[in-house]
Length: 242
Ligand code: MN
Image 1 (cartoon, rainbow, N blue to C red):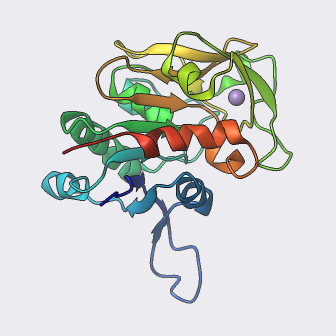
Image 2: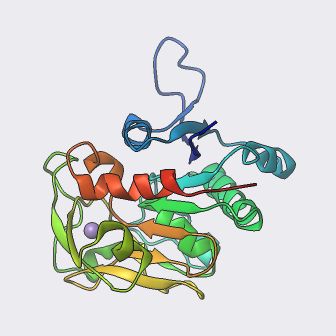
């Protein structure tokens, strides 16, 4: 029997912010992730933030692909810096969870797709650092005000690379919703896409297990951009025996 790959989505958390149960926090992901994975033929599941490492390992037991989702800033303490005045919202629980999730997923040889904050925390997890606010180093807009499924800027794709293999193009038009970016690239990673102002827009870790991360949000564009859908289709099509 053919089965589909299960995509575990790292969950975000909203603090006491919705509905009649407003004394309870809320765990989840934006539905664009769910829709893009479903459209690509994968099965999305949400991984809520938990603390116990053995339990996180069990969360990942049935997961074929880990998706590190977008969200708030990473606490600069994690990469050894003091907070900039331009730093935005931080959720320490999420940093702790994501870092454990990444470490255990790598141990378990689970393919990883990092998106936006997911790329940033992946880089930090492997010893890299971030620009806490990219305003000082950019010359194009990276925080668009148009609709989230519309492209904002171009990225140049390095060839050969996994990203190039997936999208089959040397440039892409992407959306952009970030005010942080990779500063020091983590050891063992390569840059596989940049914007024209030199911001790192994609990185990957060469090796047996696919690890790809993107600064933009392909899940928001996948319904109307076949190249963005291909990114999810690639992970949905991986043959994973565990
Ligand atoms: Mn960008």
